[in-house]
Length: 441
Image (cartoon, rainbow, N blue to C red; front, side, top):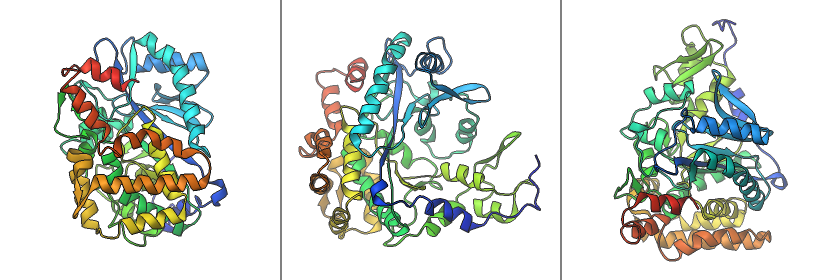
């Protein structure tokens, strides 16, 4: 089907409506998670590949058969599975991502994940694959990790610039939290506060100090890789201003260079030749912009916090031992309680945009030992925890229990990376297998 220039132009109002359609009453607010893990072969400790006899594709095929999940394919290649609203998909370097239907409670998500893990384990064991709760590939580097056969990832890999973009795509695993909003004002308040929280959360949950079998000198090498990937589409959106409308967010996305568009004949590379606003105005190679083009373009925009018809908070190393639920608990405690949001704003009053921006660059190396202005990040982190815990206790849902995992670290002034570094240079004697055992639990 041709897509010719006489077609009606996409209107910005139609795009803004996508975000407005996300507004829902607070009684319907839920919490969501996207949870990526690194698959490694248990015997070799190397990253599990896609296509070998015991590779990740074979795992997906066997799991689908055992548990009655449907395939998600790209040009006949299996790139994920779906069952109703839940998906298990592959990131570019075979990282396994669980994306589950949002739940009212953190416990609801935890039960789902535990159930899925229990079902996946025997199938993974047969393939000799372990899933790591860790932020970066501990032994294999991007040079030995092939991209999965998904057309979009191959186009992205050729396009994305930045000295660590290949590391980001092929080696890293993170956790994202999804939060609902009731109005545009509520959405933009949550968006603004979440942006200010992210460098502190990156510090608290730093969990990727060992990469390629060596200590890197960074507590979150995953966060470092994002700092060195395509600044046209990563980082903060705007200046994390006091007021930030849906339309202003859309304007930032529209000005980002496009990577490609999808048509019936397949992907059409754009390779940064024009922004989405130019595509809306002038078309590209005889194609006009449609709403699906915007959705694709917005999904190829990777800020710390991304606005959709919910708020998606992106920048956390993958972590296990219930730390993944601590991430959700902090955001739920703060962003679903108006007085907690006000307290956080008060906490952040001494800082300007420049302070948060500088902190983003200091946190990957120093985590909680970084400073913001004249303050220690570890002290601010303790205040963040205190505000979240107080709020969750007020909610009377018992979800403050999910903070216990991170309290053990933050109240001692350390991140998970600090424990790994100590063990790496001590008990483990720099043995990758011992690290892998630790982050498999």
